[in-house]
Length: 135
Image (spheres, rainbow, N blue to C red):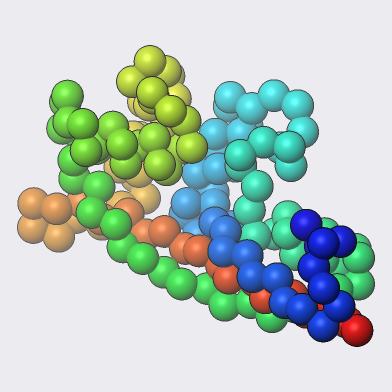
């Protein structure tokens, strides 16, 4: 992609930050279920992009955005909304067919969430990276 960017152009990447609990979830999933090179998987994170940019001596700036996501539905049996959220968090379609992954993710979310009233909130941190291609 970088090669296709015009000189003087900017590339904007929004990706899961390795600084948040969501990024640590990716590390956990990779450690338990991954195979091969993590960088060739869906579990790439902001640290991987920045490492590549640094290696290529490309200048960039970053910004992080925290979001509290209501994950209450994830803990309700047979909730379609909960399943979709788990699929989104894990980048795993049809997670219901992967009970080990589902149980690992639910346990991780349970241990790393906040409960407010009857709601469960999981903090997700995204990082925006803006790289500038020199002329």
